[in-house]
Length: 321
Length: 220
Image (cartoon, rainbow over all chains, first blue to last red; front, side, top):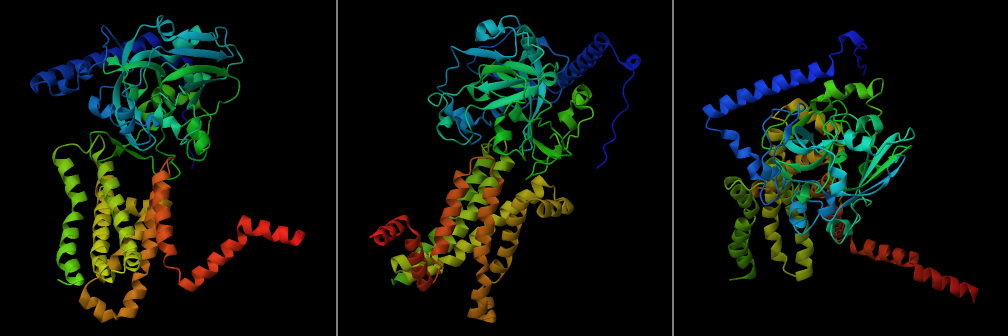
Protein backbone atom coordinates (compact mmCIF):
# COMPACT_ATOMS: atom_id res chain seq x y z
CA UNK A 1 0.00 0.00 0.00
CA UNK A 2 1.22 3.46 -0.86
CA UNK A 3 1.39 5.80 2.08
CA UNK A 4 1.48 9.41 1.03
CA UNK A 5 3.95 11.36 3.08
CA UNK A 6 3.38 15.01 3.86
CA UNK A 7 5.69 17.51 2.20
CA UNK A 8 8.51 18.84 4.34
CA UNK A 9 7.47 21.82 6.46
CA UNK A 10 9.17 25.10 5.63
CA UNK A 11 10.92 26.75 8.57
CA UNK A 12 8.71 29.81 8.11
CA UNK A 13 5.65 27.68 8.71
CA UNK A 14 6.85 26.30 11.99
CA UNK A 15 5.09 27.68 15.01
CA UNK A 16 7.60 28.64 17.64
CA UNK A 17 7.35 26.66 20.81
CA UNK A 18 6.13 29.46 23.07
CA UNK A 19 3.20 30.24 20.79
CA UNK A 20 2.47 26.55 20.43
CA UNK A 21 2.45 26.00 24.15
CA UNK A 22 0.32 29.08 24.68
CA UNK A 23 -2.15 27.75 22.18
CA UNK A 24 -2.28 24.42 23.97
CA UNK A 25 -2.67 26.22 27.27
CA UNK A 26 -5.47 28.29 25.84
CA UNK A 27 -7.27 25.26 24.47
CA UNK A 28 -6.82 23.48 27.75
CA UNK A 29 -7.96 26.39 29.87
CA UNK A 30 -11.03 26.95 27.76
CA UNK A 31 -11.63 23.20 27.87
CA UNK A 32 -11.31 23.22 31.64
CA UNK A 33 -13.65 26.17 31.87
CA UNK A 34 -16.13 24.26 29.73
CA UNK A 35 -15.78 21.17 31.85
CA UNK A 36 -16.13 23.27 34.98
CA UNK A 37 -19.37 24.85 33.79
CA UNK A 38 -20.69 21.52 32.58
CA UNK A 39 -19.79 19.89 35.88
CA UNK A 40 -21.48 22.59 37.87
CA UNK A 41 -24.60 22.07 35.77
CA UNK A 42 -24.48 18.30 36.03
CA UNK A 43 -23.72 18.16 39.74
CA UNK A 44 -20.02 17.30 39.33
CA UNK A 45 -20.43 13.90 37.72
CA UNK A 46 -16.73 13.39 37.19
CA UNK A 47 -15.80 14.34 40.74
CA UNK A 48 -16.02 10.57 41.12
CA UNK A 49 -12.80 10.42 39.13
CA UNK A 50 -11.01 12.81 41.34
CA UNK A 51 -7.51 12.36 42.67
CA UNK A 52 -8.75 11.85 46.19
CA UNK A 53 -9.67 8.35 45.17
CA UNK A 54 -6.12 7.01 45.33
CA UNK A 55 -6.38 5.31 48.71
CA UNK A 56 -3.63 4.94 51.24
CA UNK A 57 -0.83 6.28 49.10
CA UNK A 58 0.98 9.56 49.75
CA UNK A 59 -0.39 12.21 47.45
CA UNK A 60 1.29 15.06 45.61
CA UNK A 61 0.32 18.68 45.93
CA UNK A 62 0.93 21.68 43.67
CA UNK A 63 1.41 19.66 40.51
CA UNK A 64 2.04 21.62 37.36
CA UNK A 65 -0.50 20.88 34.67
CA UNK A 66 1.00 19.75 31.39
CA UNK A 67 0.00 21.26 28.04
CA UNK A 68 0.20 17.74 26.62
CA UNK A 69 -2.76 16.53 28.68
CA UNK A 70 -5.83 15.06 27.07
CA UNK A 71 -9.26 16.24 28.23
CA UNK A 72 -10.91 12.88 27.74
CA UNK A 73 -12.81 11.22 30.55
CA UNK A 74 -10.41 9.53 32.97
CA UNK A 75 -10.45 5.78 33.49
CA UNK A 76 -11.80 4.89 36.92
CA UNK A 77 -8.99 4.58 39.47
CA UNK A 78 -10.30 1.16 40.48
CA UNK A 79 -10.09 -0.10 36.88
CA UNK A 80 -6.64 1.36 36.24
CA UNK A 81 -5.30 -0.38 39.35
CA UNK A 82 -7.02 -3.76 39.07
CA UNK A 83 -6.62 -4.55 35.37
CA UNK A 84 -2.90 -4.71 34.73
CA UNK A 85 -0.36 -6.50 32.61
CA UNK A 86 2.62 -6.89 34.93
CA UNK A 87 3.78 -10.49 34.54
CA UNK A 88 6.28 -10.01 37.39
CA UNK A 89 3.25 -10.45 39.65
CA UNK A 90 1.35 -13.03 37.57
CA UNK A 91 -0.17 -13.34 34.12
CA UNK A 92 -3.84 -12.71 34.93
CA UNK A 93 -5.01 -9.13 34.75
CA UNK A 94 -6.06 -9.27 38.40
CA UNK A 95 -2.82 -10.91 39.59
CA UNK A 96 -0.63 -7.79 39.86
CA UNK A 97 -2.93 -6.13 42.36
CA UNK A 98 -3.36 -9.30 44.42
CA UNK A 99 0.28 -10.39 44.37
CA UNK A 100 2.00 -7.04 44.81
CA UNK A 101 0.30 -6.22 48.09
CA UNK A 102 3.42 -6.96 50.13
CA UNK A 103 5.88 -5.46 47.68
CA UNK A 104 7.82 -2.55 49.22
CA UNK A 105 9.40 -0.36 46.56
CA UNK A 106 11.92 1.09 49.01
CA UNK A 107 14.84 1.46 49.33
CA UNK A 108 15.25 1.82 45.60
CA UNK A 109 18.12 2.76 43.39
CA UNK A 110 18.66 3.13 39.68
CA UNK A 111 21.87 1.96 38.04
CA UNK A 112 22.99 4.07 35.11
CA UNK A 113 25.61 2.68 32.76
CA UNK A 114 26.81 2.57 29.16
CA UNK A 115 27.61 5.49 26.89
CA UNK A 116 27.23 8.43 29.29
CA UNK A 117 29.33 10.78 31.41
CA UNK A 118 27.47 10.20 34.69
CA UNK A 119 27.22 6.45 35.25
CA UNK A 120 26.64 5.13 38.73
CA UNK A 121 24.08 3.92 41.21
CA UNK A 122 21.57 6.62 42.11
CA UNK A 123 19.31 6.53 45.12
CA UNK A 124 15.79 7.06 43.85
CA UNK A 125 15.46 10.28 45.88
CA UNK A 126 18.66 11.69 44.36
CA UNK A 127 17.57 10.63 40.91
CA UNK A 128 14.23 12.41 41.26
CA UNK A 129 15.30 15.52 43.20
CA UNK A 130 16.18 17.82 40.26
CA UNK A 131 12.85 17.32 38.52
CA UNK A 132 9.69 19.28 39.31
CA UNK A 133 6.68 16.99 39.05
CA UNK A 134 3.77 17.65 36.77
CA UNK A 135 0.54 15.96 35.88
CA UNK A 136 -0.02 14.65 32.38
CA UNK A 137 -3.22 13.01 31.25
CA UNK A 138 -2.31 10.51 28.56
CA UNK A 139 -4.14 7.88 26.58
CA UNK A 140 -2.73 4.39 27.15
CA UNK A 141 -3.26 1.88 24.34
CA UNK A 142 -2.47 -1.75 25.12
CA UNK A 143 -1.36 -4.09 22.32
CA UNK A 144 -4.34 -6.26 23.35
CA UNK A 145 -6.71 -3.64 21.87
CA UNK A 146 -7.97 -1.99 25.03
CA UNK A 147 -7.18 1.50 26.26
CA UNK A 148 -7.37 3.82 29.24
CA UNK A 149 -6.93 7.52 30.03
CA UNK A 150 -4.60 8.03 32.97
CA UNK A 151 -3.37 11.13 34.82
CA UNK A 152 0.31 10.39 35.41
CA UNK A 153 2.61 12.28 37.76
CA UNK A 154 6.18 12.66 36.61
CA UNK A 155 8.50 14.55 34.30
CA UNK A 156 10.00 14.33 30.82
CA UNK A 157 12.29 11.37 30.36
CA UNK A 158 14.57 13.59 28.27
CA UNK A 159 15.24 15.90 31.24
CA UNK A 160 16.46 12.97 33.32
CA UNK A 161 18.56 11.55 30.49
CA UNK A 162 20.20 14.91 29.76
CA UNK A 163 21.48 15.09 33.33
CA UNK A 164 23.22 11.74 32.78
CA UNK A 165 25.06 13.26 29.81
CA UNK A 166 24.84 10.57 27.14
CA UNK A 167 27.86 10.56 24.82
CA UNK A 168 27.72 10.62 21.03
CA UNK A 169 27.96 6.82 21.06
CA UNK A 170 24.57 6.59 22.78
CA UNK A 171 22.14 5.67 20.00
CA UNK A 172 19.59 3.89 22.18
CA UNK A 173 18.56 3.75 25.79
CA UNK A 174 17.61 0.49 27.47
CA UNK A 175 15.54 0.02 30.65
CA UNK A 176 15.42 -2.92 33.04
CA UNK A 177 12.77 -3.94 35.56
CA UNK A 178 13.76 -5.27 38.97
CA UNK A 179 14.55 -8.99 38.91
CA UNK A 180 13.85 -10.41 42.34
CA UNK A 181 11.63 -13.53 42.35
CA UNK A 182 11.27 -13.36 46.12
CA UNK A 183 9.59 -9.96 45.89
CA UNK A 184 8.08 -10.43 42.45
CA UNK A 185 6.58 -13.95 42.64
CA UNK A 186 5.56 -14.03 38.97
CA UNK A 187 9.25 -14.28 38.11
CA UNK A 188 9.39 -17.76 39.63
CA UNK A 189 7.87 -19.03 36.38
CA UNK A 190 9.80 -18.46 33.16
CA UNK A 191 6.88 -17.03 31.23
CA UNK A 192 9.22 -14.30 29.97
CA UNK A 193 12.99 -14.06 30.10
CA UNK A 194 13.63 -12.01 33.22
CA UNK A 195 14.47 -9.26 33.80
CA UNK A 196 11.92 -7.46 31.65
CA UNK A 197 13.74 -5.12 29.26
CA UNK A 198 12.62 -2.32 27.02
CA UNK A 199 14.33 0.29 24.91
CA UNK A 200 13.92 3.43 22.85
CA UNK A 201 15.87 5.11 20.14
CA UNK A 202 17.64 8.16 21.55
CA UNK A 203 15.47 10.68 19.67
CA UNK A 204 12.31 8.90 20.87
CA UNK A 205 13.59 8.97 24.44
CA UNK A 206 14.35 12.71 24.19
CA UNK A 207 10.89 13.52 22.82
CA UNK A 208 9.04 15.73 25.33
CA UNK A 209 6.02 13.39 25.39
CA UNK A 210 8.08 10.48 26.77
CA UNK A 211 7.96 10.61 30.54
CA UNK A 212 9.11 8.95 33.72
CA UNK A 213 6.23 8.56 36.13
CA UNK A 214 6.30 8.23 39.91
CA UNK A 215 2.58 8.62 40.46
CA UNK A 216 -0.91 8.56 39.03
CA UNK A 217 -4.23 10.14 40.01
CA UNK A 218 -2.31 12.62 42.14
CA UNK A 219 -0.70 10.01 44.40
CA UNK A 220 2.27 7.67 44.38
CA UNK A 221 2.19 4.77 41.93
CA UNK A 222 0.52 1.65 43.30
CA UNK A 223 2.81 -1.39 43.13
CA UNK A 224 0.74 -3.02 40.38
CA UNK A 225 1.24 0.02 38.17
CA UNK A 226 5.03 -0.05 38.37
CA UNK A 227 6.11 1.62 41.60
CA UNK A 228 8.28 3.44 42.28
CA UNK A 229 9.43 4.53 38.82
CA UNK A 230 8.12 3.67 35.39
CA UNK A 231 8.26 4.79 31.82
CA UNK A 232 5.24 6.19 29.95
CA UNK A 233 5.49 6.45 26.17
CA UNK A 234 1.94 7.33 25.11
CA UNK A 235 2.32 6.84 21.35
CA UNK A 236 3.53 3.25 21.74
CA UNK A 237 1.76 0.10 22.90
CA UNK A 238 1.63 -0.19 26.66
CA UNK A 239 4.27 -2.90 27.03
CA UNK A 240 6.93 -0.40 25.95
CA UNK A 241 6.17 1.60 29.10
CA UNK A 242 8.34 -0.53 31.36
CA UNK A 243 7.58 -0.66 35.09
CA UNK A 244 9.65 -0.65 38.29
CA UNK A 245 12.87 0.48 36.61
CA UNK A 246 16.20 -0.37 38.28
CA UNK A 247 18.61 0.20 35.41
CA UNK A 248 19.04 2.66 32.56
CA UNK A 249 21.67 1.82 30.00
CA UNK A 250 22.88 3.88 27.03
CA UNK A 251 23.81 1.65 24.12
CA UNK A 252 25.20 1.87 20.63
CA UNK A 253 23.21 -1.12 19.39
CA UNK A 254 19.46 -1.57 19.44
CA UNK A 255 18.74 -3.16 22.81
CA UNK A 256 16.92 -6.46 23.32
CA UNK A 257 13.28 -5.91 24.29
CA UNK A 258 11.38 -8.60 26.13
CA UNK A 259 8.25 -9.01 24.00
CA UNK A 260 10.25 -8.60 20.81
CA UNK A 261 12.40 -11.46 22.07
CA UNK A 262 9.35 -13.65 22.77
CA UNK A 263 7.65 -13.14 19.38
CA UNK A 264 9.71 -10.97 17.02
CA UNK A 265 7.05 -11.17 14.31
CA UNK A 266 4.30 -9.97 16.63
CA UNK A 267 5.99 -7.33 18.76
CA UNK A 268 8.42 -5.03 16.99
CA UNK A 269 11.11 -2.89 18.55
CA UNK A 270 9.18 0.29 17.75
CA UNK A 271 5.67 -0.93 18.56
CA UNK A 272 4.11 2.40 17.73
CA UNK A 273 0.32 2.39 17.99
CA UNK A 274 -0.76 1.92 14.39
CA UNK A 275 -4.27 0.96 13.27
CA UNK A 276 -2.92 0.05 9.82
CA UNK A 277 -0.54 -2.63 11.02
CA UNK A 278 -2.31 -5.53 12.66
CA UNK A 279 -0.89 -7.73 15.33
CA UNK A 280 -0.20 -11.07 13.65
CA UNK A 281 -3.19 -12.59 15.43
CA UNK A 282 -5.65 -9.75 15.91
CA UNK A 283 -6.70 -6.43 14.43
CA UNK A 284 -5.39 -3.13 15.78
CA UNK A 285 -7.98 -0.99 13.97
CA UNK A 286 -10.18 -0.63 17.01
CA UNK A 287 -9.84 -0.61 20.76
CA UNK A 288 -12.11 -0.96 23.73
CA UNK A 289 -11.80 2.01 26.06
CA UNK A 290 -12.07 0.54 29.54
CA UNK A 291 -15.47 1.57 30.85
CA UNK A 292 -17.16 1.27 27.44
CA UNK A 293 -18.98 -1.72 25.98
CA UNK A 294 -18.35 -1.06 22.30
CA UNK A 295 -15.05 -0.47 20.56
CA UNK A 296 -13.78 2.77 19.07
CA UNK A 297 -11.34 3.57 16.26
CA UNK A 298 -7.66 3.46 17.15
CA UNK A 299 -5.75 6.57 16.14
CA UNK A 300 -2.37 6.68 14.44
CA UNK A 301 0.36 6.99 17.09
CA UNK A 302 -2.49 6.77 19.63
CA UNK A 303 -3.59 10.27 18.65
CA UNK A 304 -0.13 11.81 19.10
CA UNK A 305 0.75 11.85 15.39
CA UNK A 306 1.08 15.66 15.27
CA UNK A 307 3.82 15.50 17.85
CA UNK A 308 5.71 12.30 17.02
CA UNK A 309 5.13 11.36 13.36
CA UNK A 310 8.25 13.29 12.32
CA UNK A 311 10.41 10.89 14.34
CA UNK A 312 9.63 8.25 11.76
CA UNK A 313 9.90 10.23 8.53
CA UNK A 314 10.99 8.03 5.67
CA UNK A 315 10.55 4.82 7.65
CA UNK A 316 8.34 2.02 6.38
CA UNK A 317 6.14 1.53 9.43
CA UNK A 318 4.93 -1.82 8.12
CA UNK A 319 8.50 -3.07 8.20
CA UNK A 320 9.56 -1.24 11.36
CA UNK A 321 6.41 -2.02 13.30
CA UNK B 1 -34.90 -47.27 41.74
CA UNK B 2 -32.66 -48.82 39.17
CA UNK B 3 -29.29 -47.36 38.33
CA UNK B 4 -30.68 -46.01 35.07
CA UNK B 5 -33.50 -44.32 36.97
CA UNK B 6 -31.13 -42.76 39.46
CA UNK B 7 -29.21 -41.28 36.58
CA UNK B 8 -32.15 -40.03 34.54
CA UNK B 9 -34.37 -38.91 37.42
CA UNK B 10 -31.84 -37.53 39.90
CA UNK B 11 -28.43 -37.00 38.37
CA UNK B 12 -29.67 -35.54 35.10
CA UNK B 13 -31.86 -32.79 36.59
CA UNK B 14 -29.13 -32.00 39.12
CA UNK B 15 -26.61 -31.68 36.32
CA UNK B 16 -29.02 -29.52 34.35
CA UNK B 17 -29.11 -27.01 37.19
CA UNK B 18 -25.40 -27.31 37.92
CA UNK B 19 -24.41 -26.47 34.36
CA UNK B 20 -26.44 -23.27 34.56
CA UNK B 21 -24.27 -22.08 37.44
CA UNK B 22 -21.47 -20.55 35.30
CA UNK B 23 -24.07 -18.46 33.49
CA UNK B 24 -25.80 -17.54 36.75
CA UNK B 25 -22.45 -16.42 38.19
CA UNK B 26 -21.81 -14.23 35.16
CA UNK B 27 -25.27 -12.68 35.40
CA UNK B 28 -24.75 -12.16 39.13
CA UNK B 29 -21.44 -10.43 38.55
CA UNK B 30 -23.08 -8.31 35.88
CA UNK B 31 -25.85 -7.23 38.23
CA UNK B 32 -23.44 -6.41 41.07
CA UNK B 33 -21.02 -4.69 38.69
CA UNK B 34 -18.15 -7.05 39.54
CA UNK B 35 -17.25 -8.26 36.07
CA UNK B 36 -14.01 -6.30 36.34
CA UNK B 37 -12.55 -3.46 34.34
CA UNK B 38 -13.25 -5.19 31.03
CA UNK B 39 -16.64 -6.91 31.37
CA UNK B 40 -16.80 -7.88 27.68
CA UNK B 41 -13.51 -9.72 27.98
CA UNK B 42 -14.68 -11.50 31.14
CA UNK B 43 -17.92 -12.61 29.50
CA UNK B 44 -16.16 -13.73 26.31
CA UNK B 45 -13.50 -15.62 28.25
CA UNK B 46 -15.85 -17.34 30.68
CA UNK B 47 -18.42 -18.46 28.09
CA UNK B 48 -15.63 -19.73 25.82
CA UNK B 49 -13.94 -21.58 28.64
CA UNK B 50 -17.17 -23.31 29.68
CA UNK B 51 -17.97 -24.29 26.10
CA UNK B 52 -14.57 -25.99 25.90
CA UNK B 53 -14.81 -27.58 29.34
CA UNK B 54 -18.23 -29.04 28.64
CA UNK B 55 -17.14 -30.32 25.25
CA UNK B 56 -14.25 -32.15 26.92
CA UNK B 57 -16.62 -33.41 29.62
CA UNK B 58 -18.82 -34.75 26.82
CA UNK B 59 -15.83 -36.56 25.36
CA UNK B 60 -14.99 -37.92 28.81
CA UNK B 61 -18.30 -39.69 29.28
CA UNK B 62 -17.56 -42.75 27.16
CA UNK B 63 -14.24 -43.38 28.92
CA UNK B 64 -16.01 -42.77 32.24
CA UNK B 65 -18.61 -45.41 31.37
CA UNK B 66 -15.90 -47.91 30.59
CA UNK B 67 -13.75 -47.12 33.60
CA UNK B 68 -16.64 -47.24 36.08
CA UNK B 69 -18.66 -49.88 34.36
CA UNK B 70 -21.71 -47.62 34.73
CA UNK B 71 -22.79 -47.52 31.12
CA UNK B 72 -25.96 -45.59 31.97
CA UNK B 73 -23.80 -42.46 32.39
CA UNK B 74 -24.04 -42.13 28.63
CA UNK B 75 -27.55 -40.76 29.22
CA UNK B 76 -25.95 -37.53 30.43
CA UNK B 77 -23.93 -37.03 27.28
CA UNK B 78 -26.53 -35.30 25.14
CA UNK B 79 -27.09 -32.70 27.83
CA UNK B 80 -23.42 -31.86 28.38
CA UNK B 81 -22.99 -31.61 24.62
CA UNK B 82 -25.97 -29.30 24.24
CA UNK B 83 -24.77 -27.17 27.12
CA UNK B 84 -21.38 -26.86 25.46
CA UNK B 85 -23.15 -25.61 22.34
CA UNK B 86 -25.21 -23.22 24.47
CA UNK B 87 -22.07 -21.64 25.98
CA UNK B 88 -20.38 -21.59 22.56
CA UNK B 89 -23.42 -19.73 21.22
CA UNK B 90 -23.18 -17.18 24.04
CA UNK B 91 -19.45 -16.88 23.37
CA UNK B 92 -19.91 -16.27 19.66
CA UNK B 93 -22.80 -13.86 20.21
CA UNK B 94 -20.73 -11.77 22.63
CA UNK B 95 -17.97 -11.58 20.03
CA UNK B 96 -20.34 -10.80 17.16
CA UNK B 97 -22.35 -8.14 18.99
CA UNK B 98 -19.91 -6.47 21.39
CA UNK B 99 -16.64 -6.84 19.48
CA UNK B 100 -18.01 -6.27 15.99
CA UNK B 101 -21.39 -4.60 16.48
CA UNK B 102 -22.89 -7.34 14.25
CA UNK B 103 -20.86 -6.10 11.28
CA UNK B 104 -21.00 -9.32 9.24
CA UNK B 105 -18.31 -8.23 6.79
CA UNK B 106 -15.90 -7.51 9.64
CA UNK B 107 -16.69 -10.85 11.29
CA UNK B 108 -16.12 -12.70 8.02
CA UNK B 109 -12.83 -10.87 7.43
CA UNK B 110 -11.75 -11.82 10.95
CA UNK B 111 -12.67 -15.47 10.39
CA UNK B 112 -10.75 -15.62 7.13
CA UNK B 113 -7.69 -13.71 8.27
CA UNK B 114 -7.01 -14.90 11.80
CA UNK B 115 -6.18 -18.55 12.40
CA UNK B 116 -7.40 -18.56 16.00
CA UNK B 117 -10.75 -17.14 14.91
CA UNK B 118 -10.88 -19.53 11.94
CA UNK B 119 -10.50 -22.62 14.11
CA UNK B 120 -12.79 -21.30 16.84
CA UNK B 121 -15.50 -20.31 14.38
CA UNK B 122 -15.21 -23.63 12.51
CA UNK B 123 -15.59 -25.52 15.76
CA UNK B 124 -18.71 -23.50 16.55
CA UNK B 125 -20.21 -24.02 13.08
CA UNK B 126 -19.53 -27.76 13.23
CA UNK B 127 -21.35 -27.94 16.56
CA UNK B 128 -24.54 -26.67 14.94
CA UNK B 129 -25.44 -29.86 12.99
CA UNK B 130 -24.65 -31.89 16.09
CA UNK B 131 -26.98 -29.82 18.23
CA UNK B 132 -29.69 -29.86 15.57
CA UNK B 133 -29.58 -33.66 15.24
CA UNK B 134 -29.71 -34.34 18.94
CA UNK B 135 -33.47 -34.85 19.11
CA UNK B 136 -34.65 -38.46 19.44
CA UNK B 137 -36.88 -38.22 16.41
CA UNK B 138 -34.09 -36.92 14.21
CA UNK B 139 -31.74 -39.61 15.48
CA UNK B 140 -34.31 -42.20 14.49
CA UNK B 141 -34.82 -40.50 11.15
CA UNK B 142 -31.09 -40.54 10.42
CA UNK B 143 -30.49 -44.03 11.68
CA UNK B 144 -27.96 -44.85 14.35
CA UNK B 145 -25.07 -45.50 12.01
CA UNK B 146 -25.34 -42.25 10.08
CA UNK B 147 -25.99 -40.30 13.27
CA UNK B 148 -22.87 -41.78 14.83
CA UNK B 149 -20.76 -40.98 11.81
CA UNK B 150 -22.01 -37.38 11.80
CA UNK B 151 -21.33 -36.98 15.49
CA UNK B 152 -17.69 -37.97 15.10
CA UNK B 153 -17.36 -34.30 14.11
CA UNK B 154 -17.26 -33.60 17.81
CA UNK B 155 -13.58 -34.58 17.83
CA UNK B 156 -12.83 -31.84 15.31
CA UNK B 157 -14.87 -29.36 17.35
CA UNK B 158 -12.88 -30.12 20.48
CA UNK B 159 -9.57 -29.87 18.62
CA UNK B 160 -10.70 -26.55 17.13
CA UNK B 161 -11.68 -25.29 20.56
CA UNK B 162 -8.36 -26.21 22.12
CA UNK B 163 -6.34 -24.67 19.27
CA UNK B 164 -8.50 -21.54 19.42
CA UNK B 165 -7.54 -21.13 23.07
CA UNK B 166 -3.87 -21.99 22.54
CA UNK B 167 -3.43 -19.59 19.62
CA UNK B 168 -4.93 -16.55 21.28
CA UNK B 169 -2.76 -16.62 24.39
CA UNK B 170 0.14 -14.17 24.42
CA UNK B 171 2.88 -15.92 26.39
CA UNK B 172 1.50 -17.96 29.27
CA UNK B 173 0.38 -21.13 27.46
CA UNK B 174 0.16 -23.30 30.58
CA UNK B 175 -3.63 -23.35 30.81
CA UNK B 176 -4.37 -24.06 27.10
CA UNK B 177 -1.67 -26.73 27.08
CA UNK B 178 -3.41 -28.48 29.98
CA UNK B 179 -6.62 -28.52 27.93
CA UNK B 180 -4.67 -29.85 24.94
CA UNK B 181 -3.23 -32.63 27.10
CA UNK B 182 -6.70 -33.48 28.38
CA UNK B 183 -8.02 -33.60 24.82
CA UNK B 184 -5.18 -35.83 23.64
CA UNK B 185 -5.69 -38.12 26.62
CA UNK B 186 -9.36 -38.48 25.75
CA UNK B 187 -8.45 -39.16 22.13
CA UNK B 188 -5.98 -41.88 23.13
CA UNK B 189 -8.96 -43.65 24.62
CA UNK B 190 -10.57 -43.74 21.17
CA UNK B 191 -7.74 -45.69 19.61
CA UNK B 192 -8.94 -49.28 19.06
CA UNK B 193 -7.37 -51.69 21.59
CA UNK B 194 -5.43 -53.65 18.97
CA UNK B 195 -3.84 -50.50 17.52
CA UNK B 196 -3.15 -49.31 21.04
CA UNK B 197 -1.28 -52.51 21.85
CA UNK B 198 0.77 -52.16 18.68
CA UNK B 199 1.53 -48.53 19.46
CA UNK B 200 2.63 -49.43 22.96
CA UNK B 201 4.91 -52.07 21.56
CA UNK B 202 6.43 -49.61 19.13
CA UNK B 203 6.98 -47.02 21.84
CA UNK B 204 8.60 -49.59 24.07
CA UNK B 205 10.93 -50.64 21.30
CA UNK B 206 11.94 -47.01 20.74
CA UNK B 207 12.45 -46.45 24.45
CA UNK B 208 16.02 -45.83 25.66
CA UNK B 209 16.17 -48.85 27.98
CA UNK B 210 15.27 -51.30 25.30
CA UNK B 211 17.81 -49.82 22.93
CA UNK B 212 20.53 -49.88 25.58
CA UNK B 213 19.79 -53.53 26.33
CA UNK B 214 19.83 -54.40 22.67
CA UNK B 215 23.20 -52.68 22.26
CA UNK B 216 24.56 -54.55 25.29
CA UNK B 217 23.35 -57.85 23.84
CA UNK B 218 24.98 -57.10 20.51
CA UNK B 219 28.25 -56.32 22.23
CA UNK B 220 28.18 -59.63 23.97
